[in-house]
Image (tube, rainbow, N blue to C red; front, top):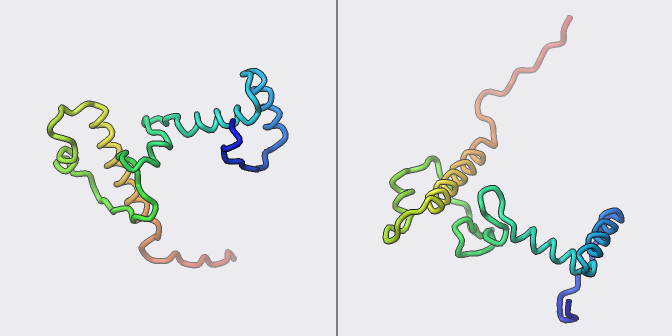
Length: 131
């Protein structure tokens, strides 16, 4: 680590610090280098869909959604729109299709969850005490 790197102060449980110190010694690194290596790995690792946090922060990635922009509401998945969104000049790979399908499913689920937040219908009746 160079002195030009950003310095950050934070709290952690003593037991976690002890574990990290032991792991740093095992990996022949300083405690700071061990923490930075583990944080970099956690940001770069992919989840079960093959997407990392780094991908979610990348504006060129299909799963990037800027926080200031409202999420468009989708009520269903259109096969025609889904296929039209893929690049027609190159052959469609399984990964491209899976990514497009997953994106459409996530948008539909988000819209469905947002739409069902407030219950509709009559309010429940008050229960009468038993005699």
